[in-house]
Image (cartoon, rainbow, N blue to C red; front, side, top):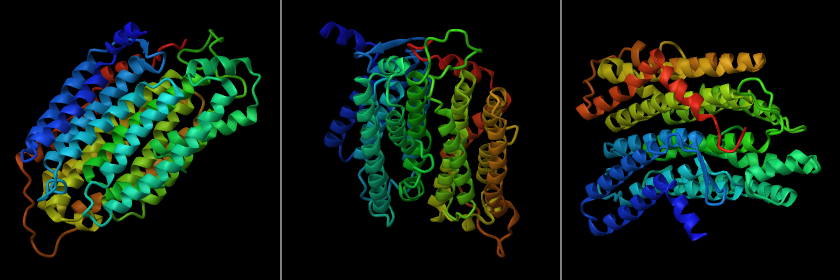
Length: 498
């Protein structure tokens, strides 16, 4: 057994690198408390090393630690998204006036950021319900602390408290659902559960209740309606860097768990003749109907409520909820084409959403406001940053030639090919609705003229360079996206499934 564990550790290098980075960061903070740059350097180096370890796992398909964690192309893709997001957030944090105010110690902040990344890595590969729950709790607890890290801000503690309350409720529902599944099947391993379900001699109603309760935990993590109530307040009260990280990386980890749970648990492995990439669901487990309803509710509620928002962080929070609804459409299709579309969407979402949040951060640092009304005349005062913000918002809407258009194109193509025409129409209508509240920002930046000539807002070269570094892939992936699509299509093969 010891030999097997040591052998499994060789496929656990990214997580071990994060664990070591977390420990070294804490010790460095204790020793070099007056030199925060040491902790920052340790964390940045650790994340880069972790990224290298992840790349080293390309093409590996294994199940380690007794089937608790899968190391496969699917987890590989999501780990790349998460570690890239973490590196960008560390860079954002270095220039955040909100975090680097006088007297605030950031050693714990960067250490917790690494712990949060570790939890998300475990979520990406978890193939056991207990492992899924433990990984989600690790990421959730660190998220609670980081959301309230700027405790001197008036709404920071409120955001953290609300996050804890909603998280505890969703976590309890999920744990109760897992316990029922264990009572029915006698196992927490997804593949074993699948084999028991295939026999078809279980109480269908009880299993439905268990599945819905378990889905509550996943829905909370991806901020799907009706489990989204925490997102707007937390996004507004948390530091912008953490808000951006939760909107991309946390959502990615939640989707990784949700997709693995559905694809591994509810497929019929006895069916071998299928259309290319399609799933055969077990008889009586047409979960895609529930997911379709969640998708419609999530995108519609997110977009409609976003119309009334005046705070940029709250607007982007509801936008993030709506984008979770778009990505759920790929899961509804129940084939590898739909899953590949979700993976493509996550990469383009990473650049355009982090870019939008970064612009909100640096503008707030200069103006002291996150209100949409205070963006009036920004196009004249800061033309480069304003144009970049326009690119990010156009991409979030899904208008060519941006990467957001490619993400939605593949999602809608998967829906149409799968026969979900009505859902594609609903998604298209929601994209039109989203254009309305994004246009409000355009209007304020470029169409409102200030009464008196306002002084230009000067951003540093580093800030302009980071904005440009996010704009380029947002545009480039809208023109040349073949390698990304090929990687996504290769990554949807989950270890242990047909």
